[in-house]
Structures are given as C-alpha cells and as structure tokens.
Length: 208
Image 1 (cartoon, rainbow, N blue to C red):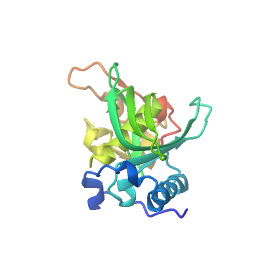
Image 2 (image 1 turned 90 degrees about the vertical axis):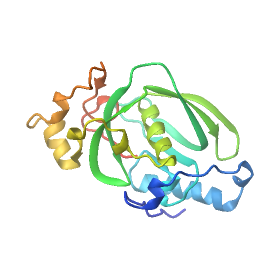
Image 3 (image 1 turned 90 degrees about the horizontal axis):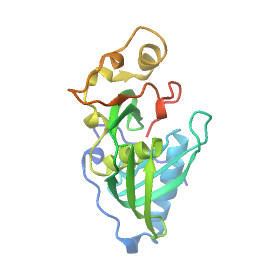
Image 4 (image 1 turned 135 degrees about the vertical axis):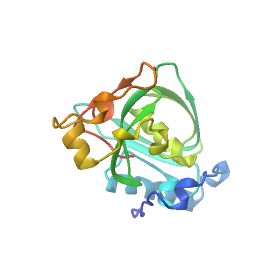
C-alpha cells in the first residue's frame, strides 16, 4: 500500500469532473489497491480526507478519517465512499477554516452545510445511506467537491480570509493583530464564522 503523489492545483485532474465507478468494477484488484493506496496517502500526509482526483485518478471515490481529539469528540472512523450523492439537511450555512492537501500551506474561511445526507457505495459495493454532521459534514462536502472539479477556493466568499498557514496562525487565530476574519460581513446573510479549525478549534486546522 504505497503512498501516491498528491497532485497540486494546476494539475488537470483537479479541474476535470470524475467519472462514476461501475459497481461491478469495485471487486477488481486495481480498484481495491487504489482505495488502500489512498488511505495510506491520506494518513502519510496527515490529512483527514482524500479524493481520487487528488492522486490523479478521475473516479468518483473518496476516503476520510479523523482521529479522536479532546477538542473534537468522537473521532471519525475510516470511510470509503464510492459514487456519492449528497443532500443538504436543514440549517444555516456555517463558516469554518479549511485547507487542502492539493493546495498546500493555505487556509481560508469556507461556508458549508452543517449536515448532509450521504448516499453511495462502500468499497464492497454495499449501499451507504447516513447523515454526516459538523466536522464530518465539512470533510464530506470538501471531498465531494473534488469529484466535481471544485476546490475550496471556489467556495470562498471573501478572499480577505485567505492566508498562508504561518500568517493564519499568527494573525487570524494566534492572538496577533486582528485579521480580516473579524471584519467580514456576508452581504446581509446572518451566518456564523467559526474562528479556528474543526468546530472552532483555533489550534487544530485540518487539511483535506
């Protein structure tokens, strides 16, 4: 299960919509090997999610996992989701910080649905149907976007919150000079800006 190279923004795989995986193909060794390699790649990169286009493969498949931490309880077990469909659940959009393994060293505030219904297949071809909420919903939406040639930058509504990681940590969540995140208004919408990483954790921003 070798880690694969993660492609970066500018690679055509990130701007090409992925194709569905034929259900009958899931049992093929090359598909199972791809899933195993993606899990290894995600873990080696210290990410919490990875979509197939991020390793240059144009298939509708992503994996995600987040370890238990004091600030986020419970942890999120390993998932492999094939041919996903998402249905937003009720609730106002929530802003939080995101990064991306394919756009290294940048962070930005991104609005996401607080919960989504996830339908698709697992790696054995069994149907999936569950609701992801909170941080898990954010991961799922981020990875789902990758399957449709969308990156988190495309979801941002104000690029004044875009920052390199060191500057983000120092000025936006580290107690330095006030950064732009505190001055944002969303064109009349009453929406929440979470300061920090998952669920507002200022020291725990994650990359997906």
